[in-house]
Image 1 (cartoon, rainbow over the protein chains, first blue to last red):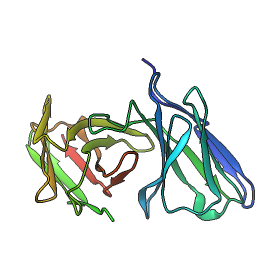
Image 2 (cartoon, rainbow over the protein chains, first blue to last red; image 1 turned 90 degrees about the vertical axis):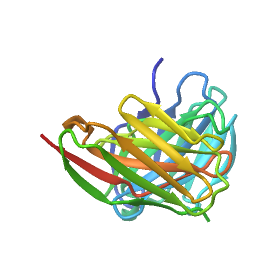
Image 3 (cartoon, rainbow over the protein chains, first blue to last red; image 1 turned 30 degrees about the vertical axis):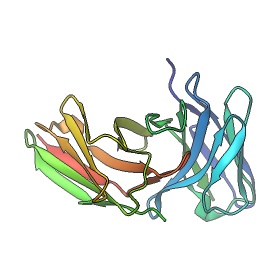
Image 4 (cartoon, rainbow over the protein chains, first blue to last red; image 1 turned 180 degrees about the vertical axis):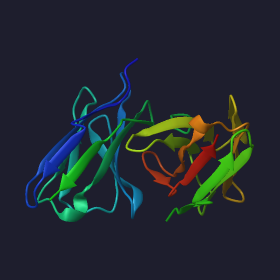
Length: 114
Length: 111
């Protein structure tokens, strides 16, 4: 079974631009969540989607948005990029949201904003 | 607001030693607790998941325990190997879709 796939692996953008990151979950998984990882803040929750609906959102500005498609693939968009948005963006999928549903992570997208 | 703390932040041990990593959380109303390892520049690899009703889980040389009432979990690694060198993170799921992570313990196992 293929794991969680994130594309692209690396991105370099300049301030003010926007970027879209993609995540394909494990087949059959309906929950996709996104996290930002930085050396100073660690892993921080961005948002979670289940069956195309955003169910949870972290404390990030409105420049961060996402969506989920009917095949459970998810995209995350960041508009008006700032230097502080440089980070490793990780996507995780799970089969459900109960206590026995582990998170499975992709290898992430490394975003550098110059 | 759930807060997760991992102690120590870094640990260096000689090969073959048994070791314990600690994770504490402030809100005991959790769905589950999951331990991960992360290698530099990579994503997270799931090691063990303990549901809120469980006390421990084992996989090979790894054993994780959970004490919800005290807000603590430990990850025990037996007979450590250089390949175990990585950052270990614990994550607590406190509602349907959100997990809160600790800052991790960076483990170095010296040959």
